[in-house]
Image (cartoon, rainbow, N blue to C red):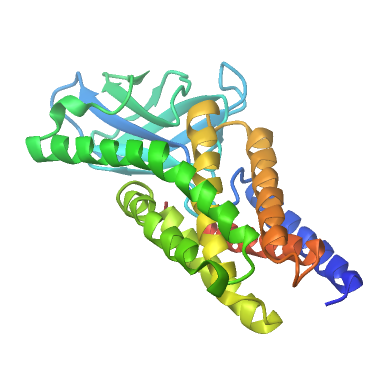
Length: 315
């Protein structure tokens, strides 16, 4: 493919991405974890009413005078059931307020509250005429059964193994595979790459299966590209696997631990960095078969596909 045609493709994809980004105002271009809020209700009224419906208002001003309901876009939404409410969003505003309809015919509004944690938990005290919302320190582990506690410990241990041991090995294997021309020249490194990926994939299925969905989509697209452009299939698919196991968890860690989930631009910049880093990895992998612009377009398509899937799937 000539460079001029690749310029046209990249420009077209940029226009498409802007068209998708603007109406949804999203902050993430993948199927990874998104900030959430969970509300558990406690009652100071008797008899205890049930929850009928509710609205979560998002505000930029501290008094919530500019309150707007949390919009629905893909998995982003607020919902209630008989025992509680929860919401998931691409990004929250600075302040929040609840308005809940109860079976006793009353609509109770809450105080204005903030959000400290990426996955935030709240206690909502239902009083005679209003609601008191208080953010908790985190998910209450004291209520876990013995088997749930053991499962939690096992998952935590697996997470430590993946973070401390697997991630450096994946980086080394990715470098070795990029440096070698094809599968025959480095058969052992390719096999090792897929074997070492197993703990991370297992952890993703337990904790955040969006990574597995991302991998499936991107590997299928990479295979289609390899067949279309006659690129080395085994090398390309292995590189796509390894680079996602490195870049996506790194991005998710930044999103969940270093950013409160309400700021658009740091997340958008992070996504652009991931796109460019993955484009660089693909360009190095295909340096003898394709120019940089082709790798840039391929990386863009892969990330745009996972972004679009993230709008459709409820996680």
